Each structure stands twice: as C-alpha cells, then as structure tokens.
Length: 448
Image (cartoon, rainbow, N blue to C red):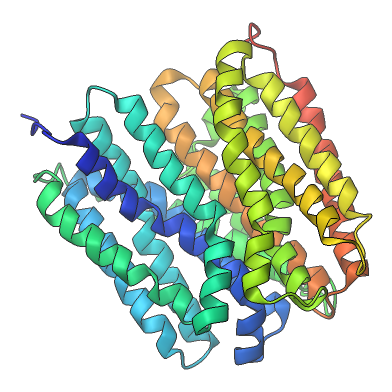
C-alpha cells in the first residue's frame, strides 16, 4: 500500500534540492579548470580528466543506481547518495595530489548519480495528481543548476578560491538530507537481484571509453598506438557480451531494430560534443586569452545559460502545436550559425559580439534539449521508455566526454584564437551532421 503524500510540493522540493547536485557540480568546474591547472601544475589535457571522470561515472552510475533503488528502497539510496556527495565535497579541498582530486570527483559523481533515478521513482510512485507538473519542476531544478553552474563557480572562485565550488554543496546537502529524512516516505526494499545489473558490460564499456580518450588526447604529440587495439577489443567484447545478456547495460539489438531512436542518440551525441566544447572551452578562452576574471567570466557565461532557460519553455509550447521536428531543426540551425560565428571571434572582438554569439548558442541548447527528448519519446516503444531515457542521458555524457578530449587535443599546448578557431571548425563538421539528421528526421505524422 502506497503512502499518501499530504504535501507533494515538499516531496518535490526535497528531491529537487538533491537532484540539482549532479548538474551543478558537472558545470561549476568549467570556470575552475584554469585555477586548478595552476595549483596542480597540470596540462589542459590532464585537467580535462576532472570533467571526463565525472561524466563517465555518471553515465554508468545512473542506470545502476536506479536498479539498486528498486532493490533496497529509493529513500535509502537517496540518503546514501547525499552522504557520498558530502564526503567528496568535504575531502576535495584537502587535496594532496591530482589523483586524490580525481577520486573525489568520481565519488561525487557516483553519489549524485543516485539522486536523480531514486527521486524520479519516488515522484512516479507517490505523486499521482499533477505528476507531469512535478517532473517538469524537477527538470527546471536540473537545467537551471547546470546552466548557472559556471556563473556560480566564477563568483565562488573569485571570492573564496577553488575550494568553494566543493564546499558550497554542503549547505544544500544538509538541508536536503534533513528534509529527506523526515519527508520522504519510508519504504521496504524490493527483491535483491544483482544479476539484473550488468557489471561486465559496464566494465567493458568503461574500459573502451577510457582508452578511446587516451588515444584522442595523444593525437597532438606522441600518439599512443597501443591504446587502439585495447579500445577495439573492448568494444568488440562489449558488443558480443551485451548480445548474450538478458538485462544488458545497453540493449544493442533494440537499437538495431529502431533506426530512428539510434539516429536520435547519434544526433544527441553530436550536439553535445559541440555544445560542451563551448561550455567548457569558452570559460578557458575568456580567462586565458581575453584576460577576464573568474567572476566576470561567470557573468558572461550567463548569456548562454539565460537564453537556454528562456527558450526551453517556449520550445515546449511550440512542440505541442507543431511537433518536435521544427524545434530540432531550429536548434541545429542555431548551433550551426553560432559555431560559424565563432570563427569571426578574435582578441579584440567587442564584448557585445561575444554575447550575441553565446546567446545564439544558448538558444540552440534550449531548442535541442527539449526537441530531442520529445523526439525520442515519439519514436521509442512505450514499454521501453525508461531504458530509452537512460540511454539518452548516456548519449549526453558521451558527447561531453568526447568534447573534453577534443579540447584537450587543441588547448593542451597553447590556448589562443587560432586553436579556438580550430575547435570551432571541427565543431562545424558535427553541426553539419546534426543538421543533416534533423532534416532527415520524419515529420509529425511519419512515426515509424
């Protein structure tokens, strides 16, 4: 028998305070990379591992934590996740070396990855009236915290130094933990079935991605050719292993049987490669080439964040009337125009010019996020909606990981306008691919 929630808005607020931790911590680091490079004497390529490790752990952590929540109870998992984030946030400022900080980032990602799936499950289980509204509110928590992360991080670093981007989590965690303890409904665990978690597939997937990144980061200097056979072998083993699993980490057969869904994942990976190149590359460019402070850089990044947040609800209403394809096309076009415009940016470009270009890129993000998600749900089989949504998030993380590898290649030796233009030119290729897939996407009535 389900517990009756007398104040559902309190449940949503409690979950929202927890779920904002993952996107917030994934984005605040963008303004801190330059400072951490200096403190730890790192190359830019090495520093990008602070981003990659977070997204890699999140990519494998969220689906695993969702299943663990079903087994042991969502409330227990939610509280455990908050404790892990608190531990990582308290330990990170005690940094002794780069490996220590990487471990803290991995722990932070693992803990915060448990909050979203357990929170979503509780909303589905205990809020029956106005469930869509509750889910949309949680989406706002997530998107706004990710969008404004660079701005918050910029002010914190300028005012208190880099440790503040970890310590700022603690007040949110304390409040969320106390609220979760008393507000979230008590639950008994479900059936313990660890066999439903594809540990082998997750391991092979992680190994493949890590060695792909190692290879990509070596392209500028001494190419690590030895990583290629490990990556290929890992991917082949992953494919063969997943085909034999009853509960695979990624259902490859389902992808092969639904071309539209597979292309949406590819398109979303491409979109996020481009978007995160700017989300993490622009703060570094503004700090190291244009000479802005962390606080000013955070304010400038508001142009991208603000327009993305403004456009998203407008795009949602447009999609309700016209279907998802016009919004997806608009997002791809805005991304292409914004990327092409970056090729015109130089050391002396007026700030207003930068803000205009970043606003266009922010608009593209607002269109793309909701447009791609609604397209996915239109083409995915209803009984596989949950798995499709999980893989959609994995696609986002893969795009973010590959973007940091791209930045690591061209920003490692020197960060200047020329290298920034190279990144923009390569991104333009991915924009063309995205635009092609947007045009190819079936219209509103052609669902197959």
